[in-house]
Image (cartoon, rainbow, N blue to C red; front, side, top):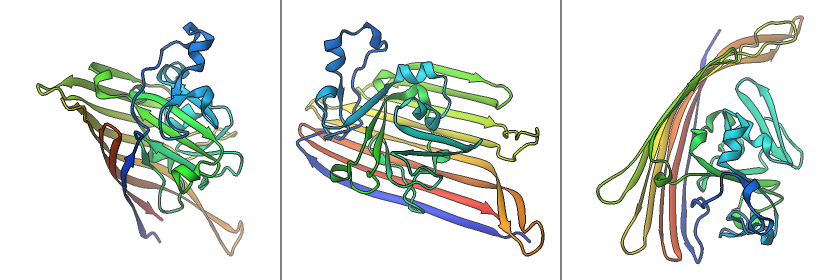
Length: 314
């Protein structure tokens, strides 16, 4: 007998006014090829995650690692969790075709909740267990400017979840993604994937971009060649608007919407041999987020709303 179970997770946060520094998530010009830089230039690369303001990487009082957009492009990864395999010290374990366990400094499992994850300053934890559903976090990877990772506690500056580390994913400004981009492909495991982006400028000096993304991943196969009922498909779309006024103020508005279906296998205890009941079913989830960021001189304000609905049929 099946019954529908609906779980709704909503997260809303007002980050307030920050004085004397900018919210991390503002883009920084980074080179495409670090091999062309001198040792001095490498030491002068700046990060914003440690003290919530830009500072030289070698002067940051923490163990910091930064991935650039070029690093991501060359990796061939197709999801954020796969990209994080490039970061030394992070434990990234793929549970099945649609689930990951990501943590730092050990204690890694599906529901690990000691790692703070930010996307453009937006906390992406779920209130269900204060961790991250990685299957719900996805971007057009070509829009990612850099990923900064701190190994070690940062709770003094960042609050809850920043116990074992912090991951800050920063996307490119709309002015850096002008024109048309299209990509696509397919195969045995990645059955089909594609994405499109268009960026332009409005008459009043606003830069914008819009994007859409889709993929369909097939189920994995066990050692006996049997399917594991863990396929996954997602449709996602969104955009970003950046505007710099004549008086030096900067305004950013961005957001996206998605819908997804993931196949899962549930195991329930039973009173008769083999003392378990295995049910293959699927989970439908959809949601979105909106982020607004305003900065003028040494004052900054960021507000975001994050919403996810999950439907589990058991």
